[in-house]
Amino acid sequence: MAGGQVKKIWEKLLSPFKQVDKRHLQHEIDTYRLYLLTSYNRLGASGGEEVAKELQSLADSTAFTAQQAEVQNNVHQQISAVAELLDQVLLIKSAKDEEPLKKSRPSGLSFAVGHAPPKVVREKTVETNPLSRAEVSKKFHERFGYSLESKQSEIDHVEAGEGLFIRGRAEPGTVVSLYPGVIYAPSQYRFMPGYPRVDTGNPYLIARYDGLILDGKSWGRGGDQREWWEGANSHELDPPELSADKSLDHSKAGDGRQRIWESVTGAQRHDVPIEGAILERRNPLAFGHFANHPPKDKKPNVMICSYSAPVSNPLVRPYIPNVLVGSEEQQMERRGLLWIKEGRSDDDDFDGKLGRPEIRTLVLVATRALQDEELLLNYRLSSYMRRPGWYHAVDEEEDRRRWE
Image 1 (cartoon, rainbow, N blue to C red):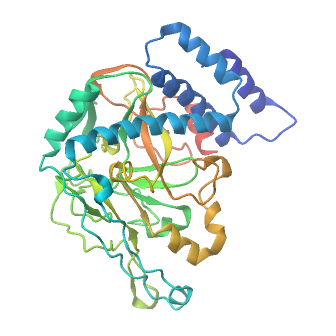
Image 2: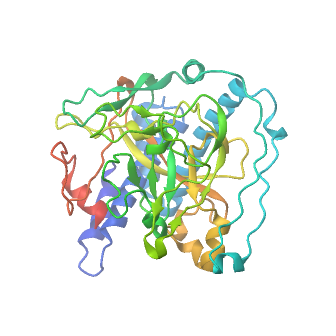
Image 3: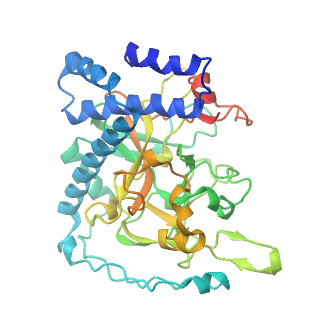
């Protein structure tokens, strides 16, 4: 990180005249790094030290919100390139032939009296080539020079289980993986499996700065076709205490609406609607939930990056491996215009237009050149909670600022 930017950030922290939000400060530091990395990658990652210095100088004079916007644009360009390649490999018919989902709009009265919203009427997805996940991954490798593989981690502790490995080479700033699964807004935490101890038996949870939590457990390793997915557990990963290698459990079939939480109030069961989508389950990048925290003698080589994917884009949407708890429309019906502010701030919006349909997810970005190695992600576990014995803080100050 450039010295000028570091000085500027720390002056904010140490200033006796203002109350500093340390969590937001860490968000600014991370955004600065992502701005440098993804911009360097966009320029071709071939300019060497001179280009890096020019980018640092530019970053020092660029406002935080502008840095955020540039990171989003850089990531979106990479995701779009991935989507274009996968369309070429997988589609038999044009994506334009796919009909949009037809939904009947629920009335406010139906929510008031507790009726479940009507089910989504699903149209048949576009026809795709009958390729396996391995074959799709091979095609991806031929085009981009790398692919991902989940296998036994090289980290020497019993809870490491499977890790995420890159085969081939990826340059700094490359979006090397997507974090799949179900996305929960803050008001929906109570619907997470096992609430309030949601992390018990589930090491596949991750949080964004805006409070959204992604649960990658039910995604597993994906599937072998493009299909309608509503977060069902048909490919759920076993918790580590049941399976040291996090193997797949095929015995838990979903029924279209995920039964996430059972309430004892009135002896009633509550189904939480999942806003499903037609997703490409063979996505060769949807493995971010397998990345392990680095051991004491190693540094992380990837970092998380918030990404807002426009769901109206028919090219990109099938390759964003995430679904929401309830639709944006349903959230508006329940809480009115206040839904806009939940789990977001104005500067988190993808293009500054509040209400734009989007999937706010996470991607993993390479922090250096990667070559045939295990991907390691700094978990930044809170120091206010009991940490597992294997956890080693990469930077204790960063951990504290992340959660203060």
